[in-house]
Figure (tube, rainbow, N blue to C red):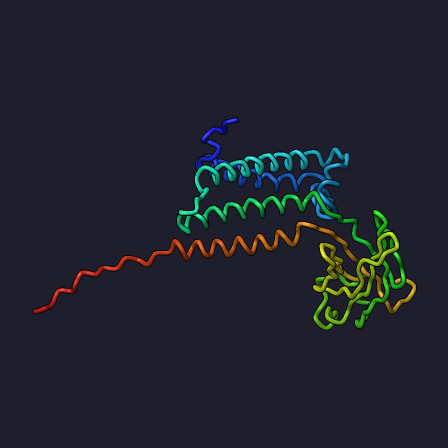
Length: 269
């Protein structure tokens, strides 16, 4: 099958990017529609594949918008592949400039692919709320146990809105929770989780979202935790750093000093 040359043209790229900009702008009216913010919250609190499987008439416009976005991104990926193949595929004797341009396109394509795959593959159950000593059953044979909650501040601040907290009300460095994760009776991960200090084990991450009102013990609040498993998260981060490095090298290779006027200065007699 012969691909039309227009697919690999810069004009097609410009048209796609312009259409994507307009398409992103239509996202704002969709959010302002009835229930739009709840739909966005549902998208962010779970895996995208689970959101697409939900049968909801209110979310259909957003799903159609997302389908259009996937179509545009697919065309952009096709444009990237054909453009790289036709214009930037280097040989062993080509200059470093052409090799760098080829690598930039290749890494960018892999970056987009990993980022897109992260929306569909992974594990992201709903955030959980628990108190000291509780064990919460998750999906697929997983269990999370709260071993100990450390909260050195006054629990009464939890009744106040978060935006009214001061530095003296809450010290995130000394408030934490110790947990352990079990799958099918086997310990998978255990450790301390604090604000800005998630527990990581491979692609698995447990994040402390905040503290909740105390339970039976009025001195110890509960915790609000999120558990995620994103197998493509680490490759995406490394590819992003590699993309920045290659772009920086390309700027060095293609940089040329400004031409200076080397004509001799006439002598004044």
